[in-house]
Length: 93
Image (cartoon, rainbow, N blue to C red):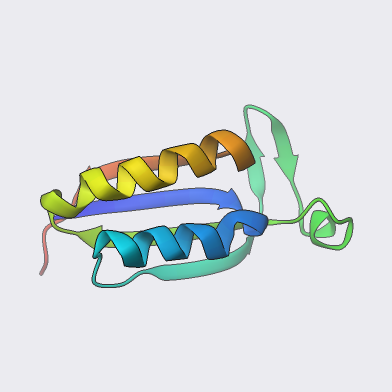
């Protein structure tokens, strides 16, 4: 099983969730108003009120077959809106 972690602008969130559903992933978890610092600077909660938007963290667990569909749909959104995505192995307990 694969774990996909996405950190992206909340402006792109609905589009990303649509891609996840269309790829056939069984589900996802969303944490809104994610703050932190990356290569392009800091993201704070105050950005949510500035029209720049805050970030969201989306976690998806899926089978390897679903991963390529996710990659194809999500990469263009990350290029346009910004954000990062990482894939790791996950073993159910």
